[in-house]
Length: 70
Length: 212
Image 1 (cartoon, rainbow over the protein chains, first blue to last red):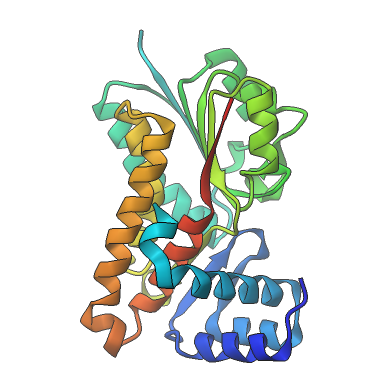
Image 2: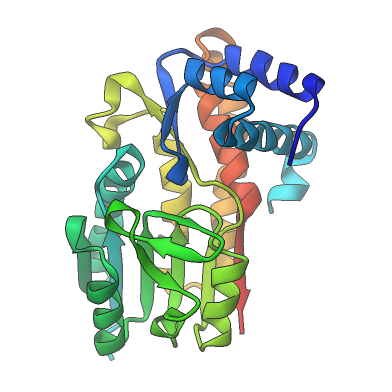
């Protein structure tokens, strides 16, 4: 899925709010630091696109967490 | 009849190292409940070892850790272990695959070939890792809630709960942890809870079940 500029900017802002000392293991994509993920989103690489999709999914789920998770 | 718990846990990168270590708790729990343990780990997690032992030992509960995609579960060094062609190896088991995206396609094939219940994820399975604890996963406060909610699935199966009850218990635990973390001082002040909340919500949103 290809995401527009606004979605990428939103995700980059959200990633900047993450602590710099925590990285993410993202399955077979490998392990990425916060700054590597920001670069991946800017580059629109596969893992960057996956991160945008995950962050947008997170934002969709959060408002009605109780109903959606159980 | 003694039930058998089969676990595979490769260990060749950060993510598999964390799953390898957090599976210790599952093995201990199964031992405490009197189950026979079959533990395939590290470089031994390959198609020959896993499929061969599943077919011979016919375990009741199967927990496959590692990486994956919609079509396959992979073991050591990302080599294919179970795909549509070999999904018959999960016949008559309750299986939990802790890997990315295996639920929809692989899960469907497994159930079509006789798997009683296939629990897995339809999203990327995220593990947040704190730099300070990367060598000590069991002490990592950022990863701990994420790994414990996925462990909950298997613990409930070991306890004799149904697959649906196991999934529901994991999601309920996620809900409680997310609420606790969101209201914590750490979430507002030092940011450490944010990666855990993100991973918890992501993983739980894709946790699901296929049954025959």
